[in-house]
Length: 332
Length: 274
Ligand SMILES: Cc1cc2nc3c(=O)[nH]c(=O)nc-3n(C[C@H](O)[C@H](O)[C@H](O)COP(=O)(O)OP(=O)(O)OC[C@H]3O[C@@H](n4cnc5c(N)ncnc54)[C@H](O)[C@@H]3O)c2cc1C
Image (cartoon, helix red, strand yellow):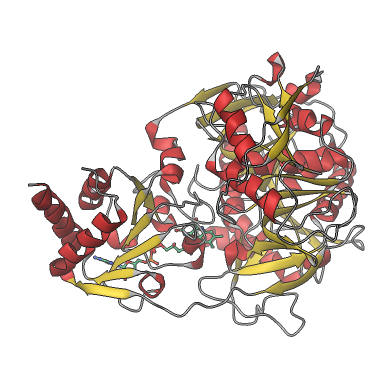
């Protein structure tokens, strides 16, 4: 059996990355009941994937999980789990984890942390940033996506996190999931690392960036802390989000929450417009999920230009200002 | 507060890579080496926290003999001393092995009189991206653990705390407040020492070494251990490289004159806000 930890957003909807993880569970060859099955690589039938949800479980989430092929939802609720504590949440997940098979989550900060705790608590091995599973074992990203590692985790239970955008969420024949509730006990010691409070500021909320349909990227080419006017205006015209390179956050021009890449957010917008960004491998790791890639760069040889679908060669300030003007002009 | 930062020597990759003859490692011959970026921030956090509490910073690495360079780089920016656990080929160690080895070294240092109130790691290393060593180490030591942390503040009792702590899991004095990345904003945690904290890049800017720092680093005391045989071993079968895609870029033009062509594309995708 494959058990998937589901994250929901503040309005109780299943997150995009959890939908990806569920699709992964349904479409990849994972060990079932301790032994790799001879099942076709097209994956197990809907219903053999189970989900674990902690906290509120909305009707729309149940619906969405049914459409993503989930047969059973393990719903974990307890007053001590209302605030996040990795150890307590991980133990609750472990309480419903089978002895053999696969436990997985998406490779978000939460998913990574919970799976690592769960791996220790179940004595299992864990592989992070997995992108595929077949007869040979697992394939995962290493070196920030520059290379892939083939590996096999021995043991009856394997614990995985799925790299962001390793697969596209796909719905299947809808089923009505069975919902199982539990009487949980939470150990006091596991609450030592409970979140005391959460500060929500626009500046450190990366969720707008990861869910935006259009992201305008800005790199060192912007030139200075005061060089963002044109790109911010374009962000506004697109109703999108600003994403920046590490050089930009490293220089203190913009907050880290806006960083895209290996050590920043991984995004999957319909379009990513990279302005003055060279396309270093660690930056590319964050934009693999972008459907259309546009580069605006003075250097025709830049990796970003070579990898883009469309490019304009030129000074980003001039080009982006002209793009903004053109959008305003067409609006009349 | 006495702090230990666990760091890793990793190849410094900017472009594409090739594999070595065995197909299980990347060819590092033409690459420089560096410390993983989360750990650079962990070192900076440690230096700031130790300075605020009158404590010390030690750095530890499990790596080849050359990894002493990364230990010295940390000393050059303000760490006091280093611990090298020498393993000619660290890639044969699983995350659980590395955590076990570090735990044993921490207990051994405690016996030698060097104890730590706070153990920092990076969230994950730039090469393997495992995201487990800090967490597995905390369980081995019997300490609580936080991950995705960007800044640390001391909330009292931090000074000189920890005599008697460091390995046995006893609660020494001192409490820290840590701020980290959550799905809805910045999450704030508060917990007693000793503890393990895995750091995520972005909360602090690593400093550059001064000339005196570099001089000090040359003479810094480095304690050396030999890594034992890995108990679990790496599950790696081999490495593979992604296919290099041929460029299929459409150049829309040069300079501002190309703007209408881009707006056409954006309209086609349907991302211009009406
Ligand atoms: C472990 C590790 C993790 C990392 N994680 C990340 C990460 O998460 N995200 C990330 O982005 N990087 C990351 N990096 C850093 C990465 O390697 C690069 O250093 C960084 O992405 C480069 O940023 P940049 O493209 O803005 O700057 P540069 O590489 O300096 O490129 C600037 C580009 O702007 C162009 N340009 C200059 N002026 C203009 C102008 N007026 N108009 C138009 N174009 C112009 C130049 O031609 C050039 O292509 C990481 C590095 C390491 C080692």
